[in-house]
Length: 159
Image (cartoon, rainbow, N blue to C red; front, side):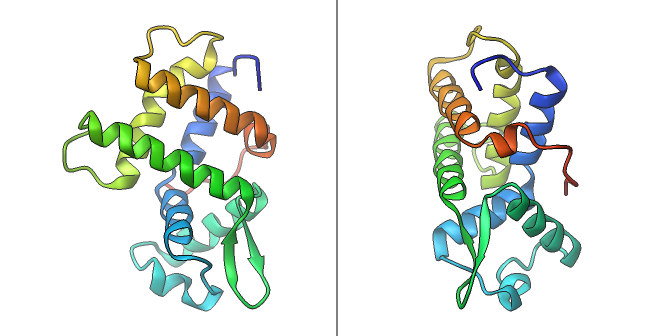
């Protein structure tokens, strides 16, 4: 992904990656390991059954998670890299107190991705703050390495 994205595609990618259920699923698995399918609802009780099903289906379709026999839902290499990207974004957001000093992790990710979205539609960083420029570079590299996310057809998103 070395060329700028059309605005609609950049928005779709941001909506996908900033989806609270996806952020919760990826970070939970990253923090605590594979989740057996029967434990998904108990592990993420703040998500509805529909959110859990559609998010895990979407994450599998995009190559972010897989079902490991005997272990459950686990991150793929792309999912682990996304978890690292989420951590870098959350650190930047916490350091800059955005969207607020006491924000939830997924809100921080949404805020950073919203700030980065306009820069995905141009070849240059164009006024992006230095710390955000680094995150923009990391995001663009992750998207280049994971074209299944950058070029996928419109998935069913869960807000």
